[in-house]
Length: 164
Image: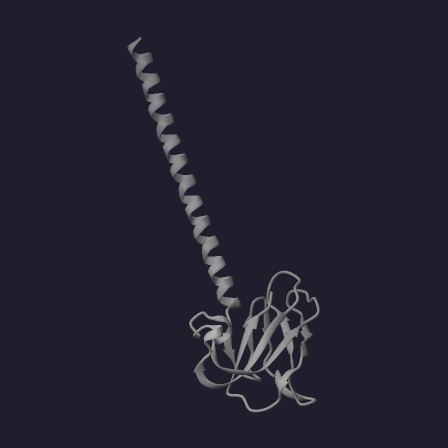
């Protein structure tokens, strides 16, 4: 009888240890999934944040890379843009972003102070061009279709921001 009680006790201890190990393992898996999701969200947010760009230089915004060689053009007296984008995601998607042409170095308080504010926030906006592409497959390129805006003239910087 004592041996049966001891076997039952050992069985209960073993089951308890397995239960605790299972719960602990699930907690570790859940924590790592949560961390991975947060890192993925943070990375996506960084890719979509407004940034300063230079004409002719490649830049990535969201799921698309605007290829080097894009130009700022005088389109009937307005700011225009001509260029090509590549889908750098693993899903079919359409590029959609805004380029703001700015002058000066003063903070534009209506857009933030450049530290996470919309559009960079530095300088007066003299041109605001919206660009998009057709639906493109992963890895493929497409021409940009841009709506000219703002009277063409001098600018000191360009900021790009995703449009959703």
